[in-house]
Length: 152
Image (cartoon, rainbow, N blue to C red; front, side):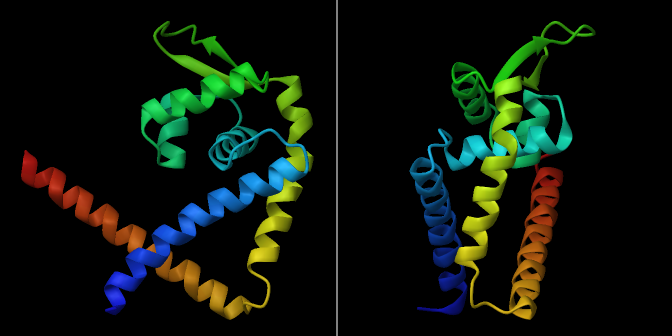
C-alpha cells in the first residue's frame, strides 16, 4: 500500500478504535458516556458555559451531531440548556452539579486510557506525531480556505 494511502487508512482506524476503546473503558468503570459525549463534557469543563455552535466549532463536529450529544447528556442530567438573554434563539450549555461530579473520575479514566495506549512510545516519537498531525490540520485549513475562496 502506498504511504499516502496508509496515512489515511491508519488515521481513520485510529479514530474509530480510540472512540471504541474509550467507551469500553468508561463502561467497565460505570461511567455512562460515549467518547463523543466525553469530548463535549471535557470541552465544557475546560471552557465553561458555551453555545452549541461554539461546542461544534471546538470539537469539529456538525451542529446536528452536537445537538444529539447534548440531548443525550441532558437526559443523563449532566448538562442543561439555558436560553441566552441577549438572543432567545441561542442555547447556552451549562454543566449541572451531576456533570461536575463526573469530571475528576472520568478525566482520570481518559488520561489513564491514553497513557496505556501510548505506552512504549517515546516522548520524541509522540512529539513528532503531534507535530505531523498539526501540519496536516494546517494543510486542511489552508485547503478549506482556498476552496471557499474559489466558490465566491
